[in-house]
Image 1 (tube, rainbow, N blue to C red):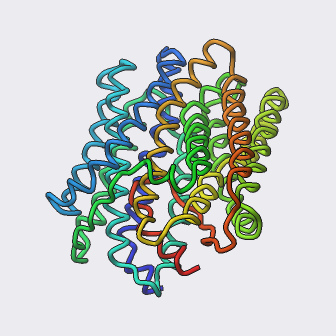
Image 2: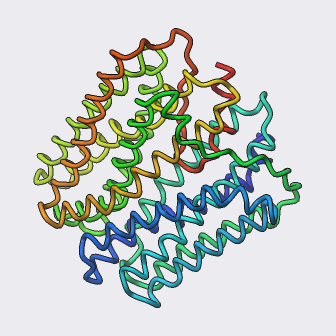
Length: 407
């Protein structure tokens, strides 16, 4: 208990950040539709978020080195709060896209600071327990953030103020802690080629994961609106996706540690295609059917990133794991940037089912590429243990790399 109490400021900051940033995406989607934005313009907001996220991942380690952890964290959180508060002052989709870039910067930068701080304080003896707590807090905060949409009125300044207050409150635990700031770790080099050299299949899988997850979380409210869900029901629709993904971690990890991970990725993609088809067919089956299929979709798609990361780490040395993690996050961001804008334009042209058609096509490509890679080289007998890997920053390799080494 004393161990987790010592990490309370960091974990509390994660929860508050999740409530703020996790609630911004669905609130922007339903607010944009309420204000008359086109579906393509709503999708642009999701893509802008990941542009800011990518820049923040690259910039945060350098800013920490210049001003320290606490000041960098306060600066990133302030950017996020400014982006949220400005929404109802300037109602324009392109202005909102710039504001969403600010929230993306906030998410990436703030998480980089927290994860760097966590990494400096954990030891080999406490790493497993702390990372387990971190994963629970991160998923729990994400789930609660989706549910907030049920009580936030779309296109209302009070709703954005509430999210901004949560973002500002996230500064307090780190600003008031007595813990000494850690020394600045060396920033990981961004070498996208490293991930491709170690595992082209892992690269394809994380791109597909970025396309899938960002499309659903950023454009899912448009789909829900098109199939007749009310705003309060959209919250449960998105929460069902996150809950399904959380429930998938144990069975996915069990399979990934016992069978060829390439086959696990292929069968997960096949299951994702099936869940896309079921989701489209269940669109008119009532609220319960829509919620259940959202959970099934999360169950089949959420673990793909972690399985791909585990597969790539099988071919990497301990010294490469931090840079490999950064490279995989780079490819995830590439898919996540393109996906919301493309998905929203497809919905605009072909209807709500186009969202899941696009995702299914991505997984068909991944299956074909996976089968081709299996013919190219055999898998390894000695493998790193599967671990759920949050898709937060380029520096996740520091936190989770030693857990793989200990396996």
